[in-house]
Image (cartoon, rainbow, N blue to C red; front, side, top):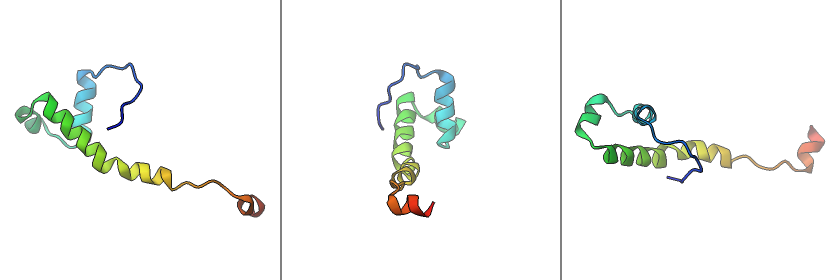
Length: 70
């Protein structure tokens, strides 16, 4: 996972939101330690987060023909 330039600490609320967004239930969290849950979130982002990144990479720069047709 990429390191982001942020000064925001990982609060309990943010931790729980991350776990919820990745599909971890309360029962899952009861069986996991915090480190394991964060590792799971990181893997989830590595696998499923690339779908959003691929759509951003498919944007191309407009050429002269694009401007002419506009």
